[in-house]
Amino acid sequence: MKMNVVFLQNSATQPRCHKRFRSFRQAEINGVVYSFDRNWYNVNLPDDIQINTLGNLNPGSYLKRLLLYFRKLRPIFKKHKGNLFYCYGQDMAFVAYCFRQPFIYEESDLMYLEYKNAFVRRILTKVDLFIQRKSKATVLTSQGFVDYLYHKNKPDNVFVIPNKLDSSFLSVHRPTTKVKDISKLRFAFIGLIRYNQLITTFIEEMVKFNPAFEFHIWGDGSENQREVAKQLCVQYPTQVFFHGPFRNPIDLPNIYNQVDVNFVCYDTKGLNERIAEPNKLYESIFFNTPILVSPNTYLAKVVKQLETGFIVNCYDRSSIAEFFQTVNVDMLNARIEHCKAISNDFIIDDVSSVRHILDFLTNK
Image (tube, rainbow, N blue to C red; front, side, top):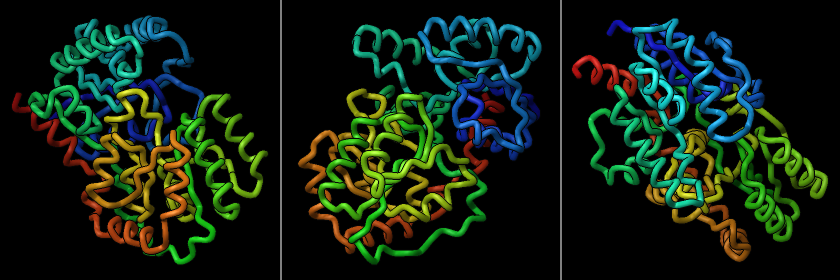
């Protein structure tokens, strides 16, 4: 299919966006990338993709961000008139719609579901459904989003592409090591640091149960989040280690080689986190690493079905304590075996997902 696609990112260092661009390139689609800078995870800037900067995108109100998008994207739409725009995020897609540009809309977080005001949530949900109807195609990264928005009866132009591992992992050897000694387990949080309360509570209970256990933090976040991670290292110098930002996907093999259990317990007070499907699911499975997740989430449903991890309520200290008291070598190795039994086809992204969208656009 001959077309030019203009990719509009709100973060230049987001690996999912890089992965999607590479998939289109593998499908022989010409593309150009424009992105705002968020000033974190700069080690993740890709060497193989030229990203044209649109300036800094600083934290602020939704309205200010929207006005910035209108101002910065107007000349881009004019310059690339007649092309198809690939928009990450509801606000970016909304601006493309307002300028009457043909667009594909991709969403990995329904952040409007985090608003406490029910009226605001309903309005923004309706806006989201409207944008999806107006898109040439919509990409959602979790089946949980589809179940919530459409109750499984999704429109033909809506596609689910889970945030799997980059296709480069087809040439990476999966580890086969089993846990042999439970006396010194290594837990880790890997990614954008956002869940200070849960991480802190887990670490406090971990140190209380076994001072030889370790908790590692790989990632970046706001200044406040980084400061909390550093303070935990000061408080527990032999149990907690903050390694800072890492290159995704380049550093993942080395990181997971140092991890026994992946901590993926998120703040589930908001609905978005309860229905999302993070990339940590696929990373953990590929590296045969049991995963720790929050209850009453779509992720917990998947983990329970695959038998690749543990479900622990990290708001509840007694639940954390019970996990430490009951986990054993056999339980960990059983979950490792379930990870090993899952094929790379389930774990690693490939060009077929993008080709399905291109076929749909061709035949539409």
